[in-house]
Length: 424
Image 1 (cartoon, helix red, strand yellow):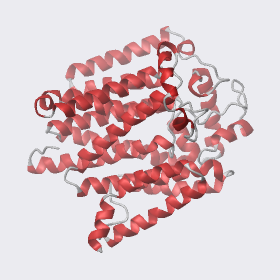
Image 2 (image 1 turned 45 degrees about the vertical axis):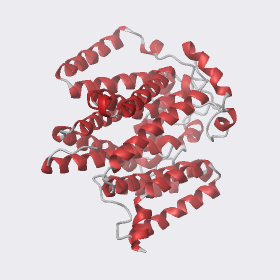
Image 3 (image 1 turned 180 degrees about the vertical axis):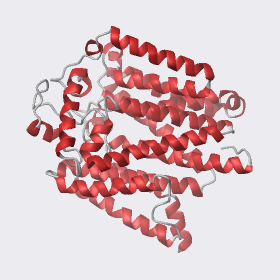
């Protein structure tokens, strides 16, 4: 019995991934999926393990869970908030399952990294079929006729069209990891594992190419920042290049009209929202944080409340703004200021762990993965300042896998520093 429970617990993360599509179904089915979580945690206990693994994130996750419960006091439409609540619960559970798997399997981190990259490539392919391409990439719209029904049945898409900004945000987590592994491991893998390297190179081209094709200004800017940060971390001259780029960006900001550079159509909302529309939304989000500092407005509630309590002048009440277009503001609006503190703690802890990892890392694979994770977090943070993939969003499970890899890589490198180098 104990051996069976341990085997089930080892693959908890895979079971949770299989349950994720249930979050796209009606609330009743999603509730059944959530009821399976206590069962999985009970199996962990029977197998001799803890229901949830101990990690440096534990206090931040505890506060996040508490504030998720506190936000229920502000819920005014459970149908609006429940999908995000369920997504956040599943995301935290997936993080725990992935960490547990990585600790129990000798090559668990390698498998997780592989799944992460394949999952990102899969999302890029879905985006290729489900996004309405603009500008020089309009020819890609011909591909949308291949699987129109499959795409149009995804809840949350408008007439089967995937938001290019959200797609760019997800790929900002994936592209830096694939690029770092492709470039830093080229010399080592081309001779012995050429097909693996070719697969990595293909995923790098796919994810970066689709990201650029979205024409998401925030997404492309964030990708550039992530690549510059990785270059600065890896090389000394890259630090000077990053400094010059930062100074040049500041000068350019003063010389150019940013409202023209980031122009958009506020009445259309979504991917075409410009800087002026974002500034107005941010001002209303700050009002919301002042009025709902502890519980927030309930998860996913800002998109409705803003038109009632804080009317927008540039954006019509008929336009669904979706979120606050800033991940920090959105976290506070969803879970209150304590929830924002917990969310910030997740980022801070990730930065500290990666800094410690980078200072100790020696083997090429771990070094390449560490550099990619640094770039992914830099790109994700930068993207979140102009847009947001909200807590509990459908593609958010990739972020929780990212955090799990940060923990596992840190543990791997710290252990290797004591006993010598290791290989994937």
